[in-house]
Amino acid sequence: MKKTKYFLVVVLTGLTLWANAQSFVWTSSTQRDEWNQSEGKLQKSTSATPDLEVNGDEDLLTFKAWGTCFNERGWDALNMLSRKQQETILGQLFSPDGDLRFSIGRFSMNANDYARDWYSCDEVNGDFQLKYFNIDRDKTTLIPFIKAAQEKNPDLTFWISPWSPPSWMKINHYYSVVSNAEFNKLDPKLDYLLFENSEKTYENLFPRKLAVNDYFIQDSRYLKTYANYFSKFISAYQEEGIPIKMVMFQNEPWSYTPYPGCAWTPEGIIRFNAEYLAPTLKEQHPDVDLYFGTINTNHYEVIDEVLSDPRMPETFKGVGFQWEGGQILPRLREKYPNYKYVQTESECGWGSFDWGAAEHTFNLINHYLGNGCEEYTFWNAILYDDGVSGWGWKQNALIRVDSKAKTATYTPEYFAVKHYTRFLTPGSKIMAFKGGNEDKFPVMIVKNPQGQYLVFAGNFNNDSKEVTVKLGERFLNVTLKPHSLNTFQLN
Image 1 (cartoon, rainbow, N blue to C red):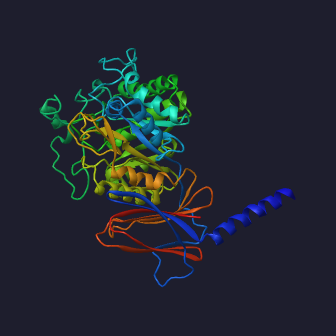
Image 2: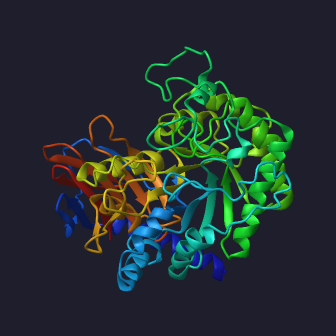
Image 3: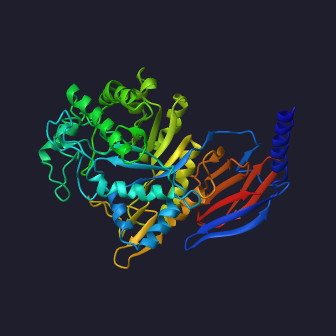
């Protein structure tokens, strides 16, 4: 009887909160005028047609976590600052009560494009026993970075993917896929391996030409060794107190890059994951999940070829998307509803550090969460100066360090992220959303674990925009400033 009364009290309290939700706190940001807060009241009626509405029982997705990546050049940027500045930034990024509240971290197995230079954990040609495997380099860069974050949040969990296997495991025996006279020393003659004589191109798809060869050597001895390599890497990090809970076999298999990378065909992806990596993880690390990713192509037929293999439900627990892969996310999720879906890398731009990057990221979050991704991972949280990679690509970051002045600036993109992370906590329910690609007007409705309703809305137009959202029997009806980011928290 007591349990029944308690249940009724909880239900009635929830209904009362919903019925009496009449006011809201409005947080708004525009260029050079971020994080203004004001209060307002919901309306009982409106003449406007709602842009979005919920009745209280919708549930598209339960959100799990926000995350970011740990890279060597981010560690270098952080160490340009005073110890006090470092502590402040780490708290804002990782503390459970900080601004961004990241609780998952991604890092690369072997070097990525934001390493200082190329390295792997075993560059000894033919070391099939992995006798010379080590993470000594990581102990001087990535691991100190991760441990500094763990001091702010000991419950951080992590996932990994390689950009390139050790160079001796690849058909071109080099860390990159293609040559570049300015940024690497790969023999240009080996570029022929990528497409051979294929002339087939695709309009409006990325990449326009698909690799005809797997750049990882498709020999059982190499494939088995590489699966064991993953396992040794996970074990080595466990010994450092860093729990890796998820693995993806390759970062961007469809980016044919002059920096660390590896091209794969659907046949090679299926073979390695189903026959080697998945069985090895299940035997040696059964608590580590294997996801298919990171998918960075909008060639639907390629991804469908992999996922339609009958072994895949036993191989992959989920699927991870970034860049062009996000375009086919809705279609794939509709066909394959039983997988978990995650966003794996927020788009980095071209080093503009401007308001346009903030709007782009705000819209990306709306797209991925609205289309079923339960995790969202950002790329570089912090970089210095122009954000240049070791291979010449200028990219954005959430925090920008001036290497001469030893100061840090919170970029517009930082505030775009904060508009979500400060309010949308793990366990929140994504209830409804409207994409903003065409009218530059993304909207999302969320209910947090405390039962409060949140509305996220962006106006990326040059004129003000009226937004009307129907929440049960009441209406949020406000005017959004041009080029503004907005969060509404109902009381």
